[in-house]
Image (cartoon, rainbow, N blue to C red; front, side):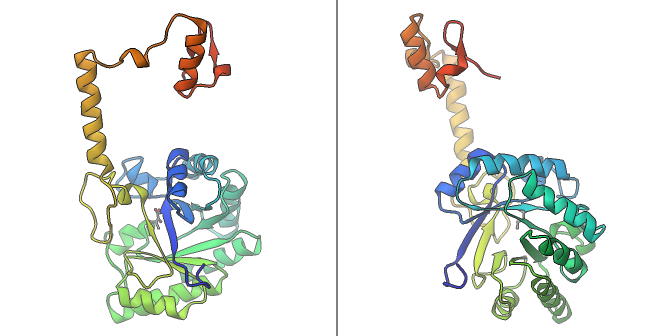
Length: 284
Ligand code: KIV
């Protein structure tokens, strides 16, 4: 796509339903990001997220997606210890998680691990600039590369990732000019988040882009919907109807006849084979 000057649309996904929705909306790439620690698990950082948790969400996304390119995010300490450990964990994303590629954070320091993983036939997406797994070393979630020295370091990191064989690179939390300059200097596509429009693609956390976040919205985020507010309003209507006794209405009730039960079970999305007894749908 980058070669054809088509911008790449990437979003995070954490489950099958969101994967289907994001794909139906035309996302080219779905990233099962370790940001799930913050938006799904309610953590303050991504650091406690484990390999097993990542693989659980990867499998869910892989079941929902049909066409998108799927990238699994390697969690903290799954690749920093040694290139061998990095390769073993990267392999699990493809073998057990159903992913097509992995992403990991860092530049010069992780170049050997990227080389090792790529040599085993696993595509690697890099991630430099604001790298959330280094939140404590950065002193918070802060824009990187603002000073000349910092900018030179970010560029060196980007080059190291590309030279090690990564096929794409996330640029996060960088001044627009620096991200544009890195994009112009690298052969591989860059995907920006808080890095300006000159990148070859953009990525957003799906909860941010859909407005599922009721807390402070970072400046780089554009909310294309307000699902949180709309969800609250929907739940309020549901509660009112439950309290008033107007839900369930006749249309949501099972009849006592056999045919009626089969129809109703099918209409509520239950497979007829999943019913037993008098046609009650199996839930669990
Ligand atoms: O974990 C994540 O969601 C990410 C993206 C923000 C790039 O790394």
